[in-house]
View 1 (cartoon, rainbow, N blue to C red):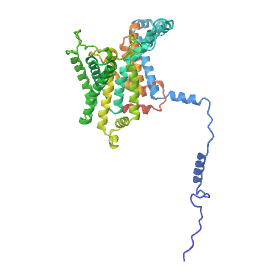
View 2 (view 1 turned 120 degrees about the vertical axis):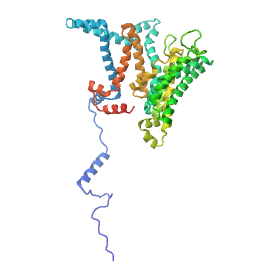
View 3 (view 1 turned 180 degrees about the horizontal axis):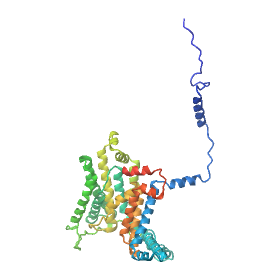
View 4 (view 1 turned 45 degrees about the vertical axis):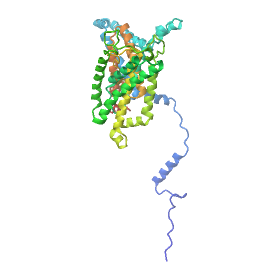
Length: 450
């Protein structure tokens, strides 16, 4: 005969009358019950939002570091303006006798130089009154910003080319050569093919895009298949592109028949980018195209499958390969798209401003694109803003040289200082005593190529 089961001394688990076994369990259950119960709305402390905003504003984030890097570069530029002005230096010869003269001369030189930098890149306030009075001076009002946008447009494309390659773990130093090939492709199609107006413009742009993409495809394949480092191959291809252009523009049928120097025939008017603000202002349709391409690259990197693979390979190729991604395919596509963007930058130069092929048709937009990508943290819209800043410095530097007698090379020094400080966030943080919350993140992102 079996014995009857012993009566339960504790309630079953999960029963309504369950008693916690220990005080710790009782405390945990009470906390869980309190968390599940509705909480009254927290009263907002007056000034809390303002204090939080100011605290985050003066922290080591990318925006603050970039802005302060520009400010710091302008401060050092002011010192260079003072020591490069002969009259100001002479006033320091009797500094202890009349210190006010030296300080006044220094301030006047700095203020005049930076005022002309602003007037040459944004707007000259003296022209606004003439425009409002009915005179035909509205072109003078928009001339500075027109020049800034004109200089910035090709830099957007070359900066995006470098930035996109950076996000994929590639260092595309060959943006200059790819821009030259893009200028060649757009230029040849611009004066060799007789096409209708709109079609001619589109075909010339596609010619620059395809030529740049082909020149970016080569180092991509060499890296993917042969393991050749893209820095070495792209640097060498820059010279190949330059010497090819030098040979091409003196060939019969390419060289301008009315010229004896090394210059090509001008492209047809139908292949030129339309001016947006009249023929007297150089800003052209390429500005709108630059905005559209920036949005497209932002979507590509942030929303598309290819962009995800590109960023994954750039962050860790071995992990991406383990996840089933083709690293070689990503390298080739990344360099090809990067070359296409740089090629569009070269097309902007020949179709928007130069209209002829010369040895200097692409300027230095390929190398400046590296600086723009660094300034923009390899983010598409950041690159666009960086290109706008560099375009403003270049446009304003021309006026600063003409009106203030300041060497235009000072603008190059300012650009270099901005990039140096951007690349050294810890230095900027130390000078301005920023909060160190994100300094390590910045340094890590820079070290890993963003």
